Image (cartoon, rainbow, N blue to C red; front, side, top):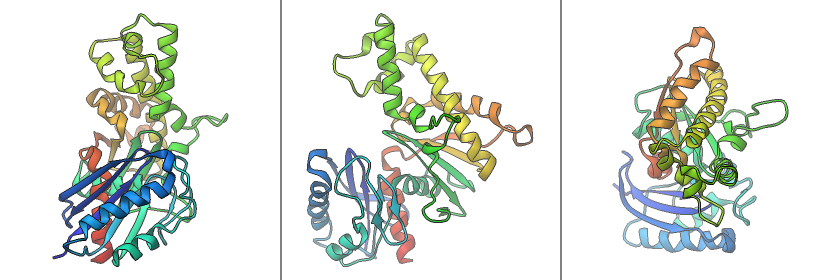
Length: 306
């Protein structure tokens, strides 16, 4: 049987994989995105990699997880907040012309959620809710092994959920860049702390030091983790009250904090739930991690041609 192709298009990375309907990745090409070249540069990378993949055998279908708002019904990009040149682009139509096979496109958080539901940490649970903590905060709801989209243009955009009446969003508190800002503030205020001493002169990527600082028992790192878990749990309590997932899966770059983050969210979430819903859904870390979107994209392609 002809293989499937899964594509992940993010703000910093591009992945193309060849795989099958079971979610198994057989071959992979990973590229770093050059933001200065915009969407046109990414399309050049996709075209070159796709030509290599399809040289010997034509795929059955292509699934794509795109890092931004997508009209999943027709595969057009609504807007890209990170890379210029994607707005209103017909990604599905362009890929179909290149490959000559069916193409389905969805938001990357939805696609990652599907991957985790079918082949990852949420296998066997229904429904499941996925939250990704990366450069932004995204979400996905999988019900009966299908993505729940809601009425157009609705999605499970938990990152834009308001935490107060002043407009504070979950993304402004729990994204990677939000944690970077908080760590930089600690570095200026308390440069002699373990976390403060880890910081370099150039700003950016400070969140990568949080895990090591936690392992060394740094109080400022524990404070950041507590605040992150509490804010995230408050946001997830709304998803729990509305959708009652059996399981919540945490993915994205901050999921690399591992068990300390998972346990903190699991302990904090019941504080925001109705007593009747206690203890709430299970909380797990993503099992697929960097492969969540590619594996989910393969699942999209498989469903599309089944």
